[in-house]
Amino acid sequence: GEDVEQSLFLSVREGDSSVINCTYTDSSSTYLYWYKQEPGAGLQLLTYIFSNMDMKQDQRLTVLLNKKDKHLSLRIADTQTGDSAIYFCAAWGPGTASKLTFGTGTRLQVTL
Amino acid sequence: DVKVTQSSRYLVKRTGEKVFLECVQDMDHENMFWYRQDPGLGLRLIYFSYDVKMKEKGDIPEGYSVSREKKERFSLILESASTNQTSMYLCASRQTGGYTFGSGTRLTVV
Image (tube, rainbow over all chains, first blue to last red; front, top):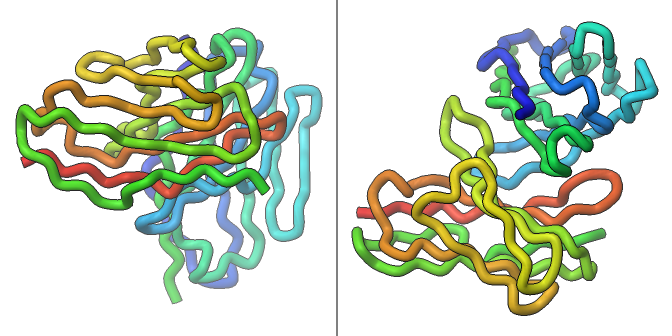
């Protein structure tokens, strides 16, 4: 089955850019997602990218997809303290039996 | 916006009790899912359902069952709660652009 991996922790200073990385194993994954989870809350969909794209930008968020390496990244420009949260990468597609497979989540800590 | 509502934010149950976690979505989606979330393990799929009265095992179904009698409601059942089922449980409903999650139920089994 699909395997999605992320590093567990990232610390950045306020105002810097954050880059959260993710790798997946199933090359047939059709959609790749980024979710944000704030303390005590459920998951909020941040953005997603279709597998035939290599980049998507939405305000401060930039998603890059390297399909050859099965590598996905989320860049947050001008990181703010309100961006402190856990970020989950997830993959969906025919090879995943139409199930969304999540990474372990990356905890982003923003320091002053 | 799709809304997914989980009836309880926090639950404390005793070992051996039968526990029901309820989830309701308001957009007539066919696909619904139950995940549990544990630190360092991410989200793991317990069960999912493609339609009323249909259910499929996810990656960790042991100790759980589900019920989907109506399209909008998907219930997770712990037949006999155990301490290793202490976790955050998240329900989701699927739409074209992704899944919408409820705010979660933090279950503690003592």
